[in-house]
Length: 128
Image (cartoon, rainbow, N blue to C red; front, top):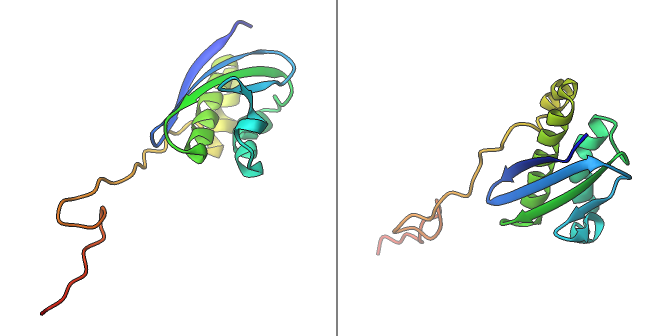
């Protein structure tokens, strides 16, 4: 198997991922993923596609991720990794699809509107 290259997105985060056979090293922006995502929950999010497809410890993964916050970045990595696993083996697709890892989450931050404090919040109203 050669190197598989895919892209995953979430909110404003974009993850470019390179997957090849190896020993299970996951590198995010030239750092170990446990160092880049110190929260246990975010590490679990990154590993979810590997756990579903029984690929933990079998692939070396190199990720370049930018934009957004750490949670959005972790979910962008999950999306990219899921796409790469489908490209590697098409039989993995139903399991990943069932978990919802292949669906690009379309929810984005709503823009601030003029005459309002935030996107929906109004300024305080007073009759007099």
